[in-house]
Amino acid sequence: MIVVTPKYYKDFKCIAGDCPDSCCQGWEVDADVESLEYYKTLPDSLEIKQRINSVLDKDEFENTIFRLAPKKRCPFLNEENLCDMHIAIGGEHTPITCRNFPRFIYDFGGTREMGISFSCPVAAKLIYHSENHLEFEQEINSDLPVLNDIDAELFMKIKQARTKAFSILQNAEKPLNKRLSELLDFAKELQKELDDYPEGFNDISFKEVFNNPELINPEWEEKVENLKVKPIENTLYNENIAAYFIFKYFLLSVYDSDVLSKVKMAVIGVLINTYMGEGDWTMHLWSKETEHSQYNMDRYKKLLKNADCLSYKNLKSKL
Image 1 (tube, one colour):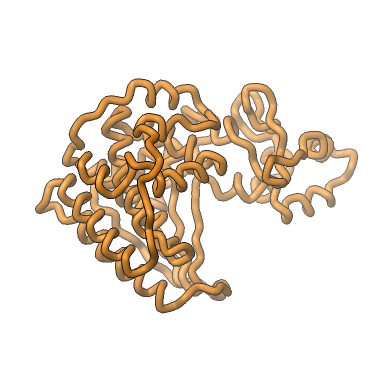
Image 2: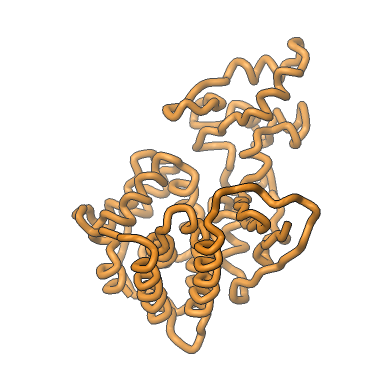
């Protein structure tokens, strides 16, 4: 299998209890099937097994989860902000969500793409402050291709389109607002080839888009409340934000033929950083609130299409 990662990927290292935020606080953690089967093999007398069994629950989507402790803390997060489950039975037996975070992994047949998410403060610093255009490293391992029903022709079309999208975004001869505008134009034309894209029938305001029903960190609510519209800066960190979204989401269009929404996310990501306070912490807060809440993310995906303030025309006007 071909494995593709951003060059900064290898530099990520979790700082555990020294982290300024905790990935073990604020959201529920799914208990995956493989981990649950392993927990069944633990001796009943083992304290950690008793603790695991005592907090297993179901969420509104019928996923098995670990019920949170007060202040939305993971029930295994101790006073030093370290994981008692990790300490008791090893990190390799924690839920797959915990083992992977903040990494995301997408398989496209014989290609696997892996990255890190803004939702982790350490990852956010790496992405935001990268001093170069987003570049990739590639290696081949012995893993077999993952079987799927992806349309190979469509995948190659979208993959080639993503290469073009990066070339538009990374053309430093033009100011970033012009590049983002050109990127929207490119996506709109490509979208016409893929599928219909009705948009813009919900009159929700730009600010209201980010008032998520599920609030994870009150700091995000303050960011939204203090939103100030201003021109975007022609900076590498804003390019890094847009590149993150193009890398993470663009190829997923092979599943839904929705390229325009993926590019809108890149543009909106830059606007979030511009309007709500420039800095990796702003992007971290947005990502934790939205990318890692199924409820908030589902809402956001719908708004990308039906909110008039997020329409192609209105996003262009903001640039």
